[in-house]
Length: 132
Image 1 (cartoon, rainbow, N blue to C red):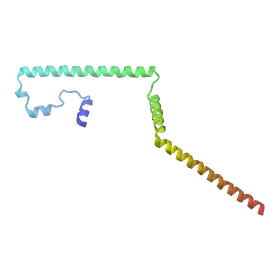
Image 2 (image 1 turned 90 degrees about the vertical axis):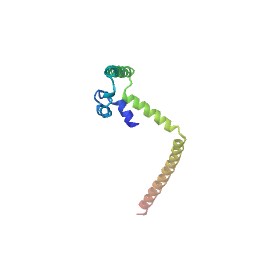
Image 3 (image 1 turned 45 degrees about the vertical axis):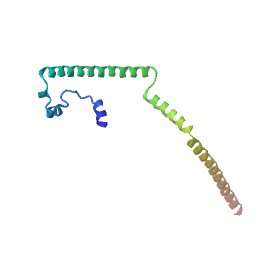
Image 4 (image 1 turned 90 degrees about the horizontal axis):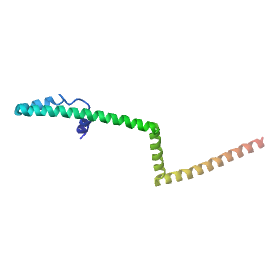
């Protein structure tokens, strides 16, 4: 499958590409001169069509970029929008909400504990200063 997909995406000219494969099967000797000429003409036509399609695709890609620029859409804006959308989706999940609630509760307990420790230490220092 990967080899097929890779073959579709390659931009190498088609002429001469698979000559070794065709030569080993000796197909040319089985074809009449008329069939060979027809196949050569079809080959030229297909290559021309492929070239045209590539040019059309390239023109459409340029137009796409122009439209996005006019609309103020650029890669950074698209990334920001995608990130914002993804972050919103994460925040609306049940797992995120439960985790956020748990961590928030743990943070409140930790803050209270540190506050109590700080108060105890301050009191201890206060008691020490009165003893001397």
